[in-house]
Length: 281
Image 1 (cartoon, rainbow, N blue to C red):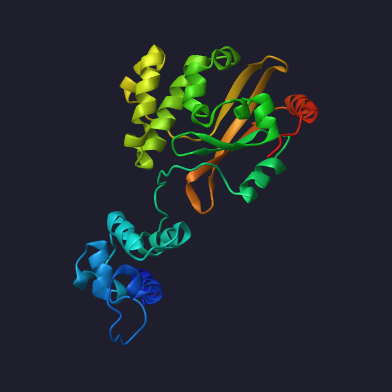
Image 2 (image 1 turned 45 degrees about the horizontal axis):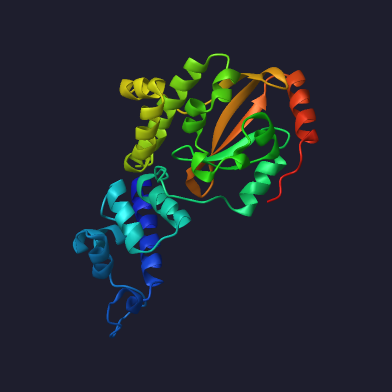
């Protein structure tokens, strides 16, 4: 069996298995007499708004590679979880789905423990639209006291452009601002969050001429690694290498770690973080 045929076979088997686990009455379909448990193929196709014949071909391993949009509709029709949806994409397209924006109030206790274990290295978790939803003690001490901000104010763009102390702390604020806007544009578009971020874009454009000019440039950069040079009010000049990591099972989140570039910077940061009060969670 060829590689593509094997993948089609695994996709079909997964679709049949997920379909067989669903209760027809929960979706308004009459239970009636069914030869097998779960929904019928045509019922899944109806819920996904695709051709019943083509859906049957997919389950039979001869439908070809479906589009991301079709897989999204099938995932919705089968009531798949985020992890199950990701597995569906891996089987159907050989890659995980793009990050999908969703409003979220925070992270799981397990993710918070991961952040805390990284102390005394600053680390935060941000959404696809760059809202900071979790952080460790060192990040609050060295970068921004996120707990002192209202949740709607904990956005990296808002902090960069509207917090005077952040502007003063960056050696080359213009370069930082340009990189942040360019990378944010990519992440927001990738997550399909253009409509969700428009109020933030409008507000920043009104309050910051620099942001308005950068947003009009339509420049895009990959939100990858870099070095953040800071003039910290207590620590003095420090340099932090920042790297973003995907969060397993949560493609809408990114773990950003700020690693000191020198042992001297690491020692200063560790001493300051150790002296800081421990947050109450």
